[in-house]
Image (cartoon, rainbow, N blue to C red; front, side, top):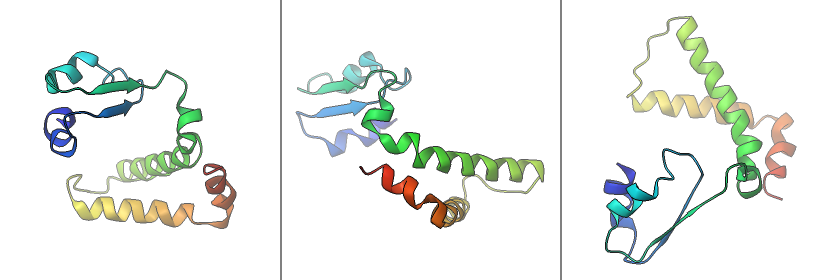
Length: 115
């Protein structure tokens, strides 16, 4: 969907797309099928390089995912009814996560990702 519907209106005839090495998104045949006549390139980051290229993935976003999983588990264990397609659910979820990560304990962690 992303390659066929979202990306085409946003790029010109010539562009460079950076992707992580996940097998589902780093498929060159899908990329070429979506952009057959364009002078575009696909750059795939090597496996295991995320920590060097995107340091926040190993620090801040790891905690973000952890908190998100804990909230999800809580809603499942306590059988709290949620509508996964409800926009307000996602707004509330990210509001709680941002609130938790704004605690003083995370200040150095957040700074370390921008060095």
